[in-house]
Length: 206
Image 1 (cartoon, rainbow, N blue to C red):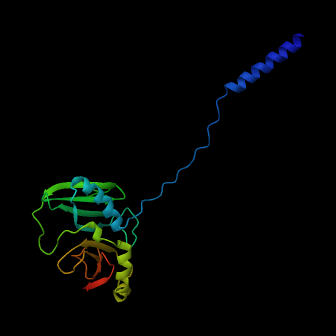
Image 2 (image 1 turned 45 degrees about the horizontal axis):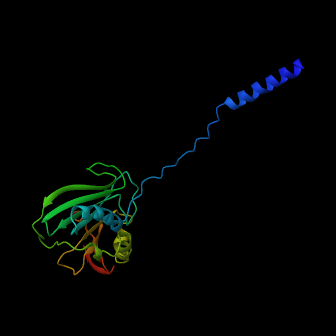
Image 3 (image 1 turned 180 degrees about the vertical axis):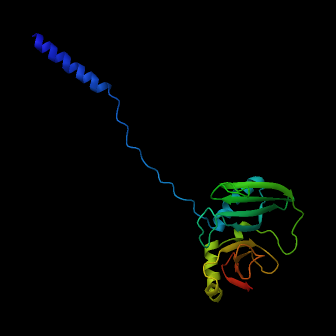
């Protein structure tokens, strides 16, 4: 009888010890963070437009241009950051916004970031504001159109960085994308205009 009691007590102690053991931690799950990718121009513009509408219900687009960042792998037809200027004709105000896929120098912040609210007295020179609904094409689409007209230039300057400028001027009836071979309009020797509404080729500038 005594032996049975000792055996039962031993079994009970073992059971209690087993229950009190801490559960083994689950194997750590390794999370793979995807590198930031550049974004299309129209997509970035609509992100900024949402913020601009909170600033001014009548916000119109004055200009959009691409910003390339060395920290993000380049991809033709896209950019790591974009800057847009919106205006409020009713309030006579203008405000710039940026959209970036990373935090970067030049006051670029990930996502949408609002710049200063400034006075705007109306169109200056040939540039004039336009409704965002007129932008029916994206930067990758207009690049495809431009490349068809840039075959000879591409042979001479293959894989050259391409920038984008979206605006409306008196030169064309609709807003146009200017596809620029180079980092800016001022330093480029070749660019092509593509209608932002129809996607049709407009003109080549050399």
